[in-house]
Length: 265
Ligand SMILES: Cc1cc2nc3c(=O)[nH]c(=O)nc-3n(C[C@H](O)[C@H](O)[C@H](O)COP(=O)(O)O)c2cc1C
Image 1 (tube, rainbow, N blue to C red):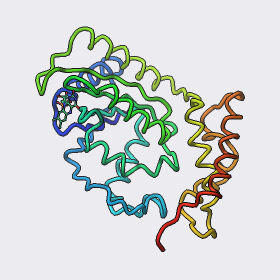
Image 2 (cartoon, rainbow, N blue to C red):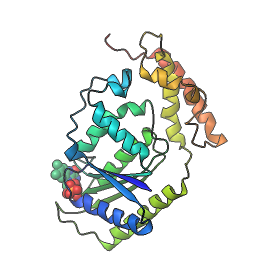
Image 3 (tube, rainbow, N blue to C red):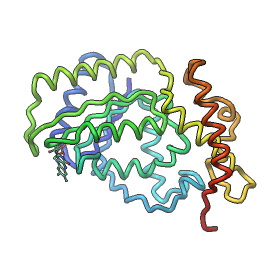
């Protein structure tokens, strides 16, 4: 299995120690596991410029598209992705947030439907769970099929000693993550996830080619494979969840007509 590690901490500190423990554990379970690593601090990804080209014209038009396209490809090709971040000001680090800003357009046009993540965060005292939740909810919004979360309070700047309790919890979560990846199973989306997906499916009809404010969302949502289903065709959706998707599609269609998002031409 192929794993991609995205390290959002600016150095190999407390959080990295946990990542190393996870890597060792996965290697014990799967001697053929391979790990690719991106240290965001070494990537020199400039801040998102806010040009909105990714939303309007497609992410290939991003001024930093070379770096972003390479990361998107790596995530797509990985069987599992490990996101690691220290907690800064109760959230993920700016390094990781900057990466997320560059792929924010995927909240409108979700993409990573077959990807599964393990999110690892540490904090000095408080906020690691909030940071992990913030990361996981973004990942789910851009399509991730499953996000496992582990967070630890280290009470340390760079001298964390993993406690037995933390280690045992981390191994349990790693085991679930690893087994899920081996199983190849794709889980059905929660009802909560069906809401934004179908709102965008409906709203984007106001931005299809030929309309006053045509944008890439309109192209994406009118592709044959996305026109009808309440979620990506590869992911099973049980019958009782479908009405929620259909309802929010209709709400999206109405909202799209009423609240037009404009841009300077
Ligand atoms: C800029 C900065 C902001 C931080 N913000 C918080 C915080 O909001 N809450 C907290 O409890 N610890 C905070 N910390 C402490 C780190 O989250 C903690 O030491 C973490 O384990 C560091 O992980 P790392 O060694 O992987 O970078 C902060 C540390 C730094 C350098």
